Length: 408
Ligand SMILES: *Cc1c(COP(=O)(O)O)cnc(C)c1O
Image (cartoon, rainbow, N blue to C red; front, side):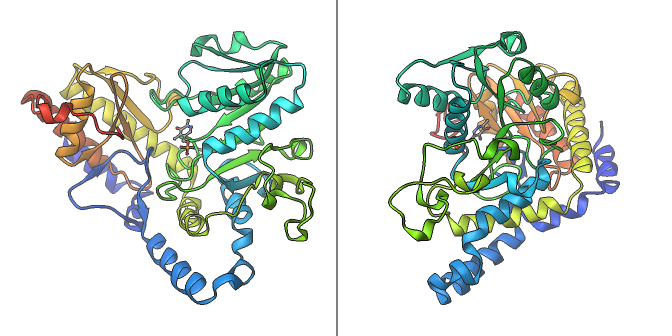
């Protein structure tokens, strides 16, 4: 594969114009949009406007005047279009971890008599930790059962209250068939709680089409909402009135400004609000979501797969010593390709020093994410060329690249 091949692909890319809509540092090849999405140009302008005009000048009037109070629903309704849901089925609130807690607790309450939360042993740790904390809070009687990926479906039985899975595995990028798994879980009476952290904005998701029950997802990954952007949650319309959240905060009350002493859950999805939403972060997230809504997710998926294939072709040609940590079949991958190498951590640090930003996931995984709205084919080509240089010169083999930082 030559640089010209990559340039030809960029020239024919129907999504190429989106790159201009982002601020991207010069001299950096950013392959970590799956961890923190890039900054849309519009975001800086919009956040400054919210700060200066809305907060600075209109102060508390802005809750009504500028619709701050409706932002969690408004941005939720926009995200709903990206994940195949109705506008009143998605809400922006809290973090992914907190939303997992709220929905998992709600689901267990609905599924009385079923003691098992089933998940995958390799699921993202926060998902497992939240389930563990909830079970402890409930005082026993429940069990988190984790099994290897290839045993999840056979572990479904009448004791399972909720099957909790991440659609795209954070480490390998392996993709679950959302509709097929949901159907299998429903066949034994289990609910499914999907974590869409690495799906939303990266590939078409059809929650309603799959008959999905519950889902959560991140605002700061492929939705480009900014560091610590609030997360979203989805609850199917048919379940909403039956679900209760243990985080019964005042903004999830049926009448927050009636200041009643007793909690009454708000209508529908509104009950999953807890406290006052972070308006500055929501304004930033809305910019990222608006930008994503302008793209055709079918084209996004197509480009994502093509970027992944180009990456693998380059790797196989230039650095065959890396083992593939992702599924070989592109249709079984999300928008990332992961490689495996015993010196993975140091190699990733050496790449970052050369301006190629991917990340490392313990124990030995080098993760490269492709954000089709701003990643070019030529970026992928160049990243692998630099990786090959680092391997050939052993540039990674330096003590400073072995120092583990807090965030990997
Ligand atoms: C990134 C990620 C999260 C992050 O949760 P936060 O509460 O936003 O920190 C959760 N689950 C998965 C699968 C993730 O990849």
